[in-house]
Amino acid sequence: MGDRLARRLKRMRKFRRLTQARLAARAGLSLGYVARLEIGRHDPKLSTLRRLARALGVPPAGLL
Image (tube, rainbow, N blue to C red):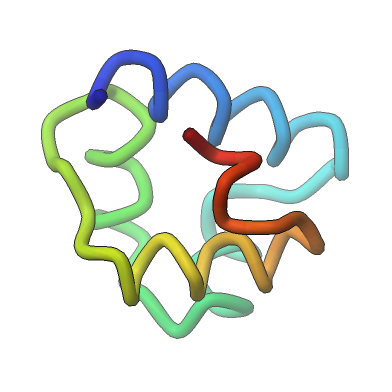
């Protein structure tokens, strides 16, 4: 799941013209954590997926 999520997260963030820092702030996460998610180093909890999805304006399933 990590690589697929990483690619989708980065693509959605860039499409919305958000920096990693801005996405992190919107989702209430650290910049470092968002950066690690985008390179596939972490598999986030469901609650984190929900926060990211809300910050991006998509349903959580859209990230998977």
